[in-house]
Length: 232
Image (cartoon, rainbow, N blue to C red; front, side):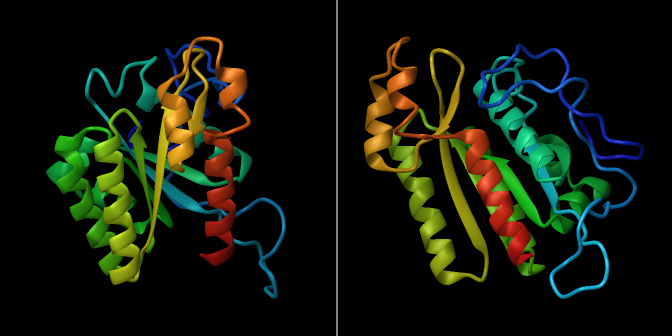
């Protein structure tokens, strides 16, 4: 859903129900309102007023494969939405084409967010997405999350190396989150080599085995948003 005025819907239409890790919320995907909201409860530590809600932005694929209702990227996006709802974070969706074209409102939403989440499963889009992440970094918007549907070990390793280099040589905070979709449509974050090797041999009844080895993707998002909110 593009960023624009009005109250944010709560979920995504036309998508099959997900697993317990990332159940499908009712309604449409979230979208940015005319202003970033304040957290409804609590006050900032040492402060005298309510703390602003964390602002997150996700670059949405428009490709038939990536944007398909049951596709891996759509499932990862729903997991992110659930995590943002749990943490009272305000999530904006920006279509890749409009970001790449340079539409002003979409650029502002992407560059001004506290945390930007991009899915680099489509290799052809990596140069453009890294460029926009670099612009965010130049604006001191440091928190950038790179997702990858882990289908190719060499690509995953290359992205991991790039993230390591950026965290060493730049002022940004880059996070690399490779994820998998199991035969039962559960989504897991597999960041270690052992987890990745285990996922390569999954069978339809292996979800119960893989579960203890890998972190549910929605839980990984939730943990990350907690950490970023503390430091933002």
